[in-house]
Amino acid sequence: MISRTSWHLPNKICRHVSPPLPTLQSAFHSMAIQRLPKSKEKQPRSPILLLTLLIAAIGILFLLSSLRPIYYGTGFSLFSSAKEMVVPKNRPRPYRASEKFLYWGDRIDCPGKHCDSCEGLGHQESSLRCALEEAMFLNRTFVMPSRMCINPIHNTKGILHQSENATSEERWAASSCGMDSLYDLDLMSNTIPVILDNSETWHEALSFSMKLGSRGIAHVAGASRSDLKEKSQYSNMLVINRTASPLSWFMECKDRNNRSAIMLPYSFLPSMASKKLRDSAEKIKELLGDYVAIHVRRGDKLKTRKDRHGVDRSLHPHLDRDTRPEFILCRISTWVPPGHMLFIASNERKPGFFSPLAIRYKLAYSSNYSSILDPVIENNYQLFMLERLIMMGAKTFIKTFKEDDTGLSLTDDPKKNTKTWQIPVYTEAGKGC
Image (tube, rainbow, N blue to C red):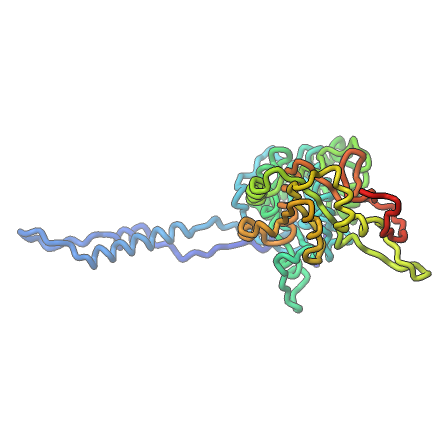
């Protein structure tokens, strides 16, 4: 396997082999109308002859339409694995001579401990947002991975079938989806220019970088964003390659606690969802009318472990209690009037778990709109992104965890826990609704 610090151009280029085109002479010959013997009376043309000519013309048009640009590799690849060079349908544009690029690798969170495994959408978006901010800070075009891996535990929608004999690359490809199926890259480029790492633009930029020699590519490790912008050995480079660092993207964003360093809000990537997801969300919001949305995160957060005395402990001691229907009813009673429409997005696996809420509210789930979702949703990442758009458009949005002093939440447990394992609490004595 090629070292992650080595750089090459793609050595596996997609070639479309078309049947040889007929010469112009033969094409005209096949389409020529044979002259009929001279006769005093005008002879009718044969229907068979006309049909033959029509078929020949259609065949030639088909051959012409089947032509595709053919890109030839130069025998070296920028990636640790060979990739097909495909020009994205929604972003065909030439490489601009004044353009400079920032490259973080062909997988989000790689290099790092998450290369072989795969983190959830939220974790990957944190890294992606960090890289986009860096490109924005450096005034460079961001080279985005063409695919995002999907954590199997987050993909109950669209089961991923994998062969036991498949290579790690094949398994990764089978458990990933196209980045442009999640995000609208054209919309994103209005804020930060982005291209995919399998695009013709990136291929052309890499080809040009090889002609620049030492000014073509800088393999960067341990340099801050300010260094990359201010030091001439980096600022003049056509391509800045961040994959020289052994840390994952997420770990490179350690300075995100410095609020002044954050250039993009959390809502940026959710609002950049692909057009088909945005359109579907708009249709559902129109059907919901005036609604309140709640996000109930349970499944992956209800983790407990036994201490040395055999007692169960949890990082979120009140979460299980506060996200049960009877406690939700009590919690939201002052925020949501009776009879109101309540849209629920949750990873709770038990069917009918939230049905008790129906005694006071009208309940709606994304599953109620299968006629809208089934044609566009292929995996749970797309489903969550669409649900997120619906929640963002609600009159009132109630989150699971308490994230700040102004937002509404089902529990007062913080989202960012303190790594302290506590005994779960299931009662709330002395309090009523």
